[in-house]
Length: 103
Image (cartoon, rainbow, N blue to C red; front, side, top):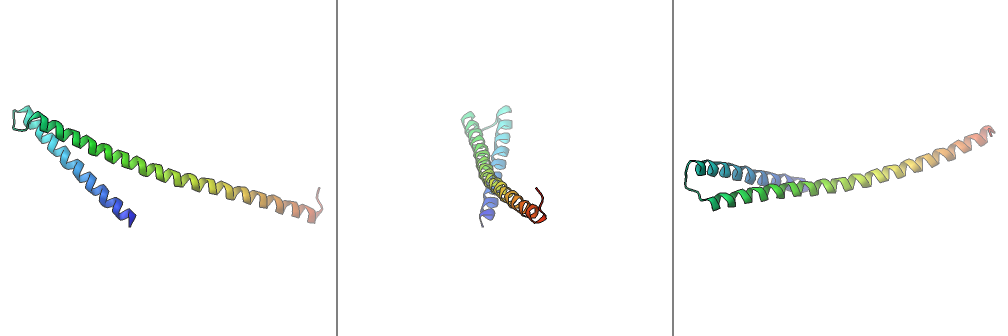
């Protein structure tokens, strides 16, 4: 369910960014050729576009940070299990040495 919400949210953000980018490009072309949108409208749209893009980047960085935290926990657990396995092998080797009477 969370993955589905994440995908829907990404689609919405990407759509907003694309639409705003098209609008900013269109208004920029109109401004160059003396069209109707004012400079303040163009600036407002450009700022909203940048804010949307930064929001998306910030969100992706947060998701990456959370994933890295889970990976870090998994790696720590993995090394703990390896340590346990090594001690178990050490104990088994000492038992084998005792049974074979090897010093």
